[in-house]
Length: 54
Image (cartoon, rainbow, N blue to C red; front, top):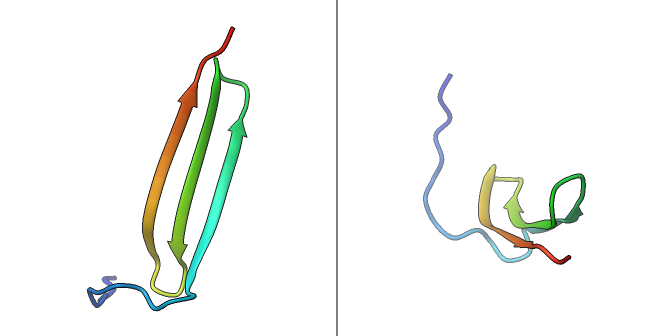
């Protein structure tokens, strides 16, 4: 089944920011930061950060 999605910028106030920081059980530290438009089922922005400190 296909879903038709219209292109364009999401409406103001419809983005939800979700962060996973820190993600453990790996060497170093990992963080993932996203902005998701759940109404249109679109990930508007996704970034990851990583650092190793010993």
